[in-house]
Length: 540
Image 1: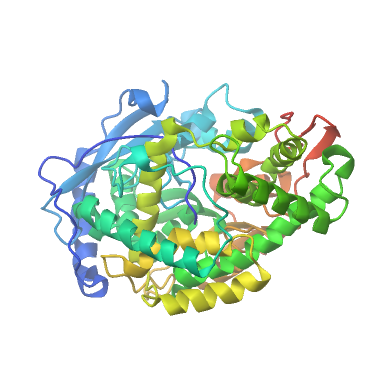
Image 2 (image 1 turned 90 degrees about the horizontal axis):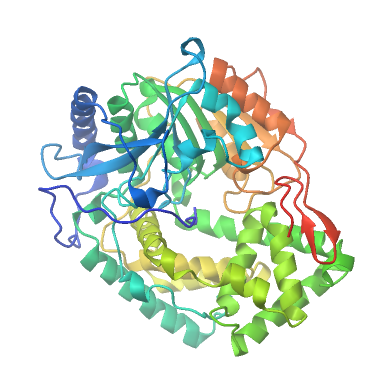
């Protein structure tokens, strides 16, 4: 759910698309849904006839031959398939194996919402990291690897809520603080953000629900000439896949969902974020336990309590006197990344340790905002809000937010208020939200077996979401990595997980029962100056 930092930059609405501000009212999504599904069928037939003309990728995509790019045209509003359109940028690397083993295209979405997937085909190129290439070797041999910028992202009619030149407000304050004055300021900022998004978002803002992105996915499938979709989704990409499988069950061939958003419509997205806060506290404790076990390396404390005290001390120090552009907020963001991925445990422990010993250079180098990324980051946040705020029903009353987040934060303060501040514009969003798609609830055709992959202690997408999706998709199988919590199991090597994903992608076999895999190795400290990550081999 929380967006990742993305690559990619600008593109405008295709000729004929309106750039007028989104109205404060949009058609009821339930009333318009039959029209939009009919419009999706029209758009898919059109795309099937047109196909995709692949050629060189845009220079700013950093994608080189043999990766190629092309565009797919989709309606802004699927209820009006003959109206305004936008072009989605799609990337592709042809399958490396002989014709006898090729199985068409594998389309990938990395999550967000708001993240670009254009980079995905590069995982099959020579020269990528050895672990990444190893994880994707079978898929790269069997499938054309296909990525894309979803609507509103990067090269696909990007939306914006503010001038990127003023986006990176750093150094920033401790986001865990929730005094009366902070709450009042954050509420005002959230209202301004929602209004700015309305003013700058354009016609696309009212057409950014996950169901709209799922319809785009079906048009991409048709443009690729694929009768059925092979799909790999991570994080929010799992929800996109689940919605696709609900709207287009007969169009699914293979689907892997990795690190699963809870699809229960009652939690999309307000309740899901509160559950995320609980899981982040648990995952943060994993990092503190690990650091305490390596006090001889980092000197941050021999108990989790002492590690927390040293982190809090660093937060206070940076709150009073930032290190360049790094304040308490930037340190907290780095800590959140460590809670996302244990590949970040080593560098973050090293940076925090060096800072508290008087050397802020490693922390500043890693955590200071990069002005070169401001445009992409602002675009990513705009899309994140546009999708999540319009996907489901959000409380409009501040007292509900204050009550619920205060309750959670009393015991789980690590991420709660930071998450609330990020999502608070949804309380005054100009496009009416919800109701969310009831995943798996449609009568009639069912998708073929879906493979679900999840880590037991994942913070960003708590494990309960994988179990809920498993329940909602009959015939699905669940692979659980026990004892770990890294988000996105594609980012590291685990033989037990990868072998089963590969078997499924090649044969469609999910096995006759769910599988529990042992956890991948944790990072291994190797000296007082740093440590080696057991999964990447990288030394810090």
